Image 1 (cartoon, rainbow, N blue to C red):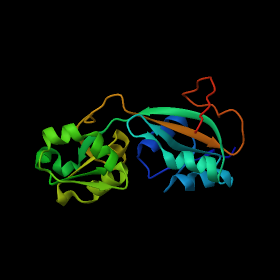
Image 2 (tube, helix red, strand yellow):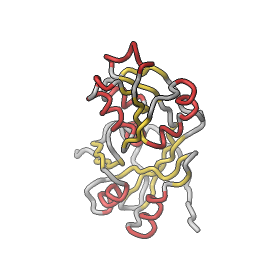
Image 3 (tube, rainbow, N blue to C red):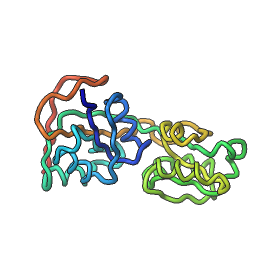
Length: 206
């Protein structure tokens, strides 16, 4: 039996990857660089399903997903999953004992904004720099122990890039979450997943 291929908005170890791993633990998971590339991959039959973000509790709708589904490549939404967004401060193991001497904090711009209160209170005066994703920040911190960097990312990124979490749950709002949708070329039931729940939903865009 061929392994199911699931595309997702990459890179690996982002919140989208975390959601894919929960939903499809046994599938072949393939990261794509952009949301349109994900949607094209399922439309062209290269992937069985793809998972893309559609809404964040704080940032609102993910417009690129909505626009592409309506105007470019109308694919079937056959399922959804909501994942809590939990951000942690992590450093290279070499810097674990002196993380307070961090010289730069790196993450995705949304994550930096989501942790504003913590950064203001605990890391005042330390410059921050935005990266393409939380996972990219974690990878960069892993590769540059000499730079005294701290990355803000999820627990999967800490695991994948072998970083030490020095402060857990540093996000300002505990209720933040992102909703992801599973897209398929064909209408039909979603494959069996650990998070199965019944019910249908319609999204109207005006």
